[in-house]
Length: 150
Image (tube, rainbow, N blue to C red; front, top):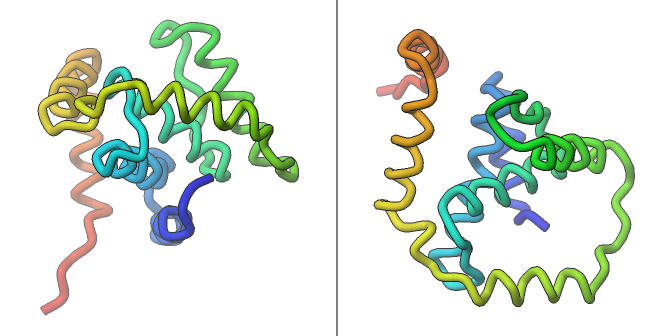
């Protein structure tokens, strides 16, 4: 379950008209914080990001599933399932399953949330995108950047 602060931040981003990926970024940040403070670990930066995105979808962020060809069919199916889960009222999670997931993550390392791991992941992710796509993202970031009032 995401923290109240995280949900509020994501809702603020939505009100400001920011992209769903920006809203989801709040959940990814929360996940990185959890790993850094020792709540649990993750096998890789990619897994840590995936957990955050899953939480975001379940919390109602309108984040589409990844495009075909970029990830496996299983990942796309799970993303669609997470989105659908946000639409219906939530049931209490199975305590046994929750415990199993947390204990499995506790056995993983904490290096997945390190600056080096995240930087490596970001570079690898950017390499798969074209120059035009990166330029468009930069332009949008400049347009939606909060201006500092003096």
